Amino acid sequence: MRYYQINPELDFNNFVKQVSDWAGKFENEVSEKAKDYYQTQGGFKPPMDIIEMDKYYILEIELPGIAKDNVSIKVGEDNILSLTGNKVKSTKDDIISLRHERRYGEFKRSVQLPDNIDINQISATFQNGILTLKISMKEPETPKVVEVPII
Image (cartoon, rainbow, N blue to C red; front, side, top):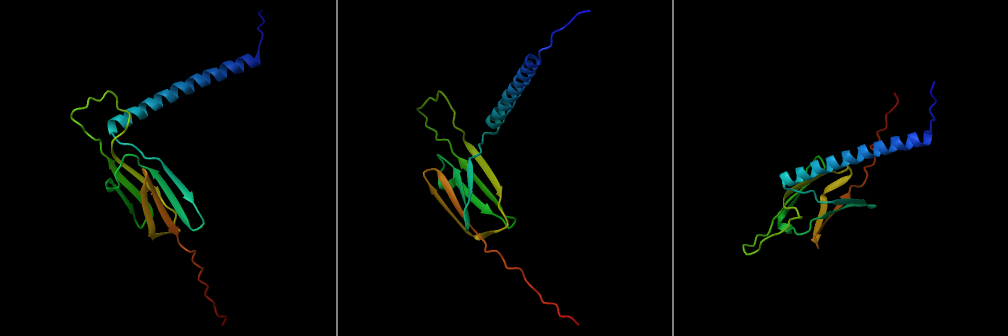
């Protein structure tokens, strides 16, 4: 009969290392797939911050290197805000490019806005590559009360 010494701490550490290795491989594979997707699609997804204030919402979208004429903002009656645009690559014939890290092409972002917005009270400013949208909230409607007579 053989006796084996069991060390729970060592066994647990080995298990954690195996899971960590697997997670690292999975993360690398996913990031490679995402990189391939963005390279083949040619577009990008501009980062956006959404801030809630007392009487309005603020949306700030980073659009560096994009002219405001190349950006379109639409809000439908379903309260979906759609931001579309195109980041145009400047072409110069006498320059040989050695590396490309910036993304160019068309982009689209859609955001479901809450029901309490007033789509007629939206303003947009574009300064230093930041598009800022100010969306006013509707005043809450007072519930309609109907008195029922007793017969």
